[in-house]
Amino acid sequence: MNGRKEMEERNKIDAEDIKTNHHAHYHTQSKEVINRLARAIGHLQKVKAMVEEGEDCSEVLIQLAAVKSALNGTGKVILKDHIEHCIVHAIKEGDQKELEELNKAIDLFIK
Image (cartoon, rainbow, N blue to C red; front, side):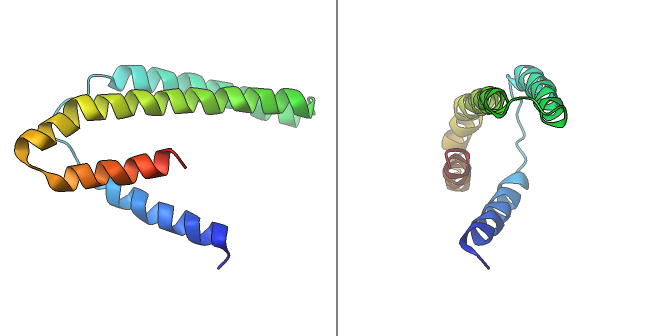
């Protein structure tokens, strides 16, 4: 396996581990996250159309950077909500596993 494929496989495994964790409390920013994701999806569909129509590569890259920024902003909202609710709850409950999973998620997010 090449290095990139190995990294993707490791990330996939880590993401699967994180995905299996279900919280028993409410996430206050779910609607905002859903709205942000919907906007990013719409924007990405427009970028795809730009590529299909043969638009200038520079313009496509600029729009991709905007989509990337939107997704990073969405990730920050999720992270903040997670820290304010899930992690606070985990600390109160003495749940070390939750803190370890947060560290894994942060590592994946900032790559």
